[in-house]
Length: 294
Image (cartoon, rainbow, N blue to C red):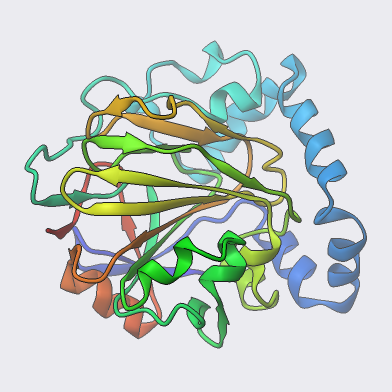
């Protein structure tokens, strides 16, 4: 059971998790852990499942997936029966106006839908994965130069579950550099897995880039793959100027994670997000929603 904070309604809610019993078994029992290490974390498994999700027959899963997980389709550009495969449904686009993006230069918006954990004054050698588990930014980026520029800065972790809108966007006007791709495993990023796999983000497949934001300085975007996420698509053009709210890329099927790093004093995150993180809870946010100030 995953409890998160709904700040719009000022209450805690229980997340609907796709395959919750299976996830608990896979990452908590000896036999399940054995299967994860033997097969589920491997690229081949996610790649094969990705192929299936690209087929027409996979579209038969869509209707029941929406019903069981109570997905509101009114905000999306197509009806459920208009998608030719499950992956096409999974990377679905929003209707125009489905998300309100605050264009104020001083407002930091969420880059995606998901559950956020927020940390200020981060120690680069002990960035929090989940309570009791930490990792270093140097390990995450595998870069000896850039990581130390973010000491005592701000780290935001956005967890996207399979039910979420799976496109991620730019938080400001600016220019994004090239993407560095790092090979890795495909562990689930569900909190059940985060509690059981040490330095999970540093072990999984991931991609990162530096976004030269007009108002928040040089910001690191890191996209982390997960079980059944065989592909991370970057849809932006390196070196081209983008506008706040423009699409950066998207994940194909599975839960995924976006991590953002800001330099010291570049941003002030909303107090309720920081408080809930300190209390051990993620907070639900939508792409374009205000999460901080310059």
